[in-house]
Image 1 (spheres, rainbow, N blue to C red):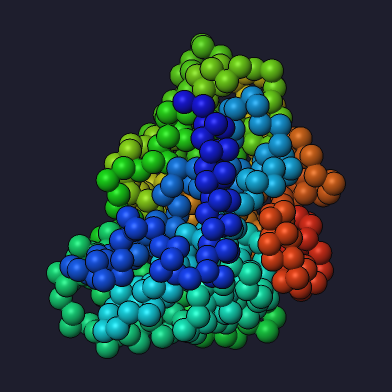
Image 2: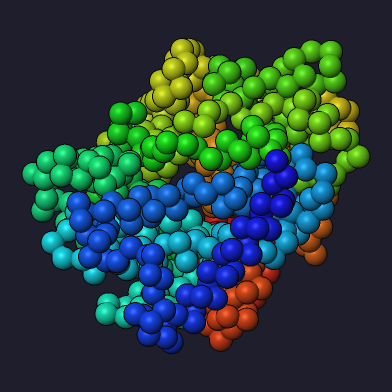
Length: 529
């Protein structure tokens, strides 16, 4: 299958949809309604209007549409998070070399908005459905946190106004305003969940493909999301006290601590498999395999296929991220390097107990009340990840004090380089010196391995902390040479925003101080990072 053909087709469709939505607000709804379109009354039967919209929103957290997944998680997050590299020889303008095509930015921005807000607004106008509305609030936060963490300021507080249509040209909010509003909305959703804890799961079972209507599990996910977001802003000077308060309250209220509560979106068909198995446009990045090969990590057999290398030996081989097409054929690369091991029935992972344990470990390292000591929570995170993937040996792995990440040896002999880091696995318990930064690198590195393949989250944490340390970009096609080593800091707004929402996007650019990829976001302020 020619994936580029379908990408172009996808964007023609989405741009047409955006144009129709923009025009539609100026026309009479009855005159312009498609006679074959389902009415609100018809959708109300058997709560279809609730379930269909909830599931559509659930499908935007980690996008389930294959091309949207490709743009956001495989191309963008996969490259910047250190997980995936491209095999397509026709891609000379791409995320990994810091010069993506403008229309590739559309998916991560405009398409997410047009997929999210019509469904969100409809749900919020319904009566007597407090739990679905609370879930919708959580979903909007989960979706838009990823968006703001990619771009910076986005339309948020004014994009949906009660009693009005969802605006396609709403004003932008600064990122600090967005985060504060998100925390407020999560508190509101949590109160709605608490008020409805006696609701039987069967009432919403058919309407929800994550927790099947289990309110208590939704609360654990909500609190875990609060913890993730609080940690994101912990380096912002004016948020340090508030971040600690939010994180401690979230843990006290109950976060995900067991794999049975992992946030997974269950689907009949996981269409992201097309990117890796059918189209073969990606192979595993060198960065993550430098770490996992060096650590002899037993999770490799659950994460990756083996590659054939140069033909002499099968092993786990990574493809260097941030390189232009090399003259090596796609078929040769597809054969040589490891692929993602998955099936078309896998659920989409949003958040796991392992990630939450590592977040708590970092909080404990900072002196926050996280319900345990940093070392214990760190080792618990490793154990939970091993259990999630049904792999033994977590205890000996966590105790290992000799193995370090491996140097990169390209099986096709082009991009060999030294190891990205020398960090070991075992916690440093020496109290004679301050090992905060060293142990922080351990936490983030092991969390990064555990949350694979969540590329956008991995990229955000890399920007926030500087970890895990990544291999430098070989072919940096941007104007900013320093990004070869420190990585891209944000995405530029797509060109369509300047034509469709020009006045407001210019206000956003003023908030940022420019629309360049080297500009740091509000929370990207760690000293000496």
